[in-house]
Length: 180
Image (cartoon, rainbow, N blue to C red; front, side, top):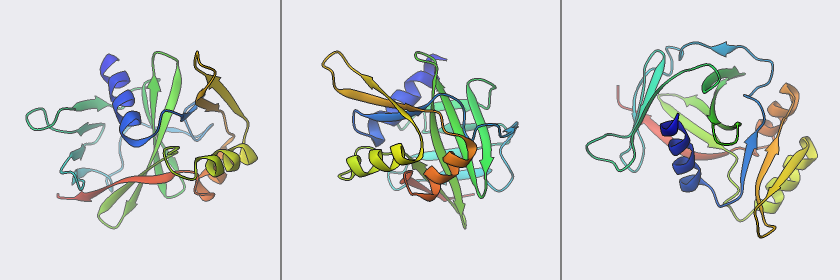
């Protein structure tokens, strides 16, 4: 559990600013959980920074113990790491055990590559993304001790989740090229 929390924190620190968007429930809501990764995703991938992503039938590994500062190997686990399908994409839901909210990543297969999408508020168009998000679903603001918004918590319906994707609120944050 601590590894998963650390992974989420490191991943969020790398790809976003201090303000994040998290989900109350795994997405898309009311969709079946997949017990294993589909054959089309299984393989070994590498990104532009030479970090590797290995996807097996019911687990994944990111990084390499010997060569990277960060390494994680996890299995799909109910109420912890949940995989769901949404149209032509796969949605990985990682539960933050400290606050019981979910960080959501979209994996989209593009030929032999995997494109990873996330709601990235670290961009110049942060206000536009937040306004678009609020036009689609209700967002609860979580503030820090200084009164600054540090997180938005949302709980979209299945239809609203698809609108979030279609409205390009999720941004491409990484691309992994398939090696094997």
